[in-house]
Length: 178
Image (cartoon, rainbow, N blue to C red):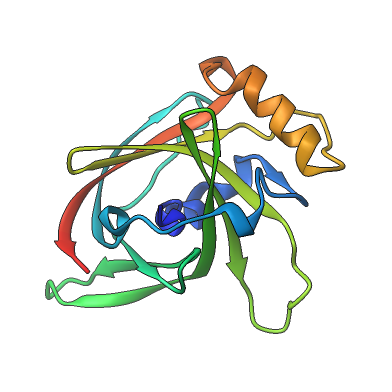
């Protein structure tokens, strides 16, 4: 499943409050691409659990398969003339891991000159019909540091549905296919 779904440029917009880890929630070798994630996704709204007044401007999330296991993600914004222009929020890569039936996006920002940047933003996500939803865990509420993928997975197994630890749920509608 093309994890770079999400995963997601909105991540750049609001990732400051979202859980990150030096370890992913699974192994890249077990990832897979899901063609249904590829395409253009229009931001339709958010549920802000952190009560920080999360404000995300209208944008498109572009998810493109990079190889058989990873995605590239780009955020696009419409300018005043309704032409698509790039919003300078960076480019992300990501892959999918699973815990039970729950899919999780492991997202990294690609920053020029920072090849050793290994932090992963961790987003459980769902794709139902043409709506993609991903969930951020609040870094303000989770003070735990993860020293391995195993520690992170134990935390996620225990808390994957604990909305009191979420920062926000972001929703997108499929606008165009790849």
